[in-house]
Amino acid sequence: MKHAGLTTSLSLVALVGVQAAAAQAPNVRVSGRVQAHYRMASGDSTAQFPGTGVNNNWEIRRLRIQTDVRFGDHINLVIQPSFENGALRMRDAYLRVGFGPRWGVTMGQEKTPFQRYELTSSNNLLSIERGVRILGLGGREAMNDLLFANGYVSQDLGLAVDYTGPRASIKLGVQNGSRESAADVNNSKTLAGRATGVLMTNPNGQAALQVGASFVARDRAVCSTCTGAPAYYADSSLRSTAFGLDFEWGGFRPGLHVIADVATGDNVPTALRVGAGRNLANVSNSADSNLVTFVAVHVVAAYRVTVAGDDNRTIKFVEPALRLDVTDPNTGVDGDAGLLITPVVNIYFGASVVARLGLDWYRYRDAAGATQSAREFKISWQANF
Image (cartoon, rainbow, N blue to C red):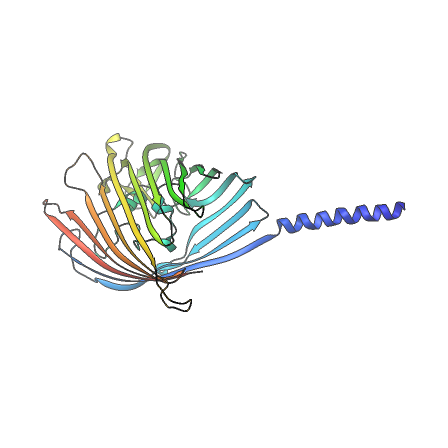
């Protein structure tokens, strides 16, 4: 009997050990996306849009493979390299360890938690692009371009703590400030935070109205050598801040869908920016005169309609969309704001196979104060799995 009891006990211990090992065994999921674009630009001729050179082409705008690895219930690893435009980049590369179902700590490279449309997956961009991207147009920025150039959005290296509740979430992080895949150039760090909440749900329990608020305080490295390849002082920096409010009505499903962002804060004007690679908008000295105040509004609205027919129909949904972006890079100067309007038609051949046809129309003033415009017709042919 003693031997039988010992054998039973050892068997139970072994079974528990096997179950624990199985619970921690990695569960790997591989996904990816490809987006092929055609672009054709035209418009008034200015120094910022000369209207010369190549004005149309095809390109692979995005080509990414993502690996999601899950260890048990609360540990996740994400790796996402990017291959588009003839270059290999590392986009996301982070490990999140959850301390229960609500709290978690993430370390690695991920997006700064700022601007709802920036945090929307590129699989689902209703306007094809987040900012203004027109062949031949230089020196002009919509909201997302200005935020990216100032180092407020996109990927950076760091650590974040997050809380996810049934109707609200909070994320606080500290990052290098030198952006994607780059070692920090000074001892200061960028701070960022975001809070979101679900105010209304539909009869199916899906989010109907979501709101969010974000802040980011980015350390601006001061260059000791500002020409050629910049070098920076290790212990000298200028800190700038930006704040954002946003809301989202509806979702990526039939019916009305609206995503809106409002942002304001400090901007380093284009002529004063020092940087290389993606470590942009650093400064040549610590003077507050390097900073001006920007204000920007970005709204995109779409209405998805289900196409009648059987399950074998080629087109599942049709979704007209309209984007409006007004960005003033310096509220202390008149006449420098830009207006971006983008009408788009999105045609869904399946839930993840989409053709998007749109026109970016951008209005601005040239150096003489005359109103000018540039345009680009776009086709996005994309699929994700």
